[in-house]
Image 1: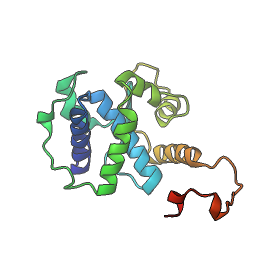
Image 2 (image 1 turned 90 degrees about the vertical axis):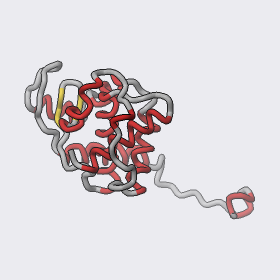
Image 3 (image 1 turned 180 degrees about the horizontal axis):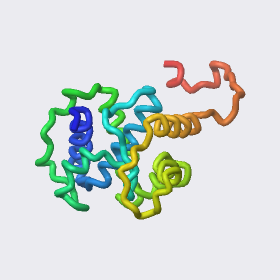
Image 4 (image 1 turned 60 degrees about the vertical axis):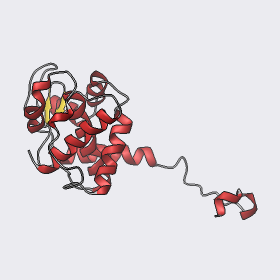
Length: 180
């Protein structure tokens, strides 16, 4: 496991404990996947040096599975944290981790699995193209370009303006705080 993956994992574990809702290994796996997608969409480069695989319960990093498997489907103990947060990851990446946590910690593990299993997601595309039946194990890698393209399209869709029309307002129509 690379230091980047370890520190990102530890950061998510810590955020869950701080919020009083420790995360399960499954939830951590999915949040790491969403983090990789966000990083690809915004930075146009992978964050992790390991490929996600199209496992039956969604995208997974094998090294994270091996590290967290002793916790089963229960919460991961903060005692496993063994990296110094901020030693490998930049402030911007730590901010992305916090964003991913804030958005996706509202969902339980099965809901996060459902999000990764939606038709047209990289996980679904790989499993369909390879003919992997639903519920079957697989170690098929999910191409990083496929993940990046999918997340970029979703990001662009989310930030696309409702129209191309630019509205100009006279200064006197702005509240006082808007001109400060």
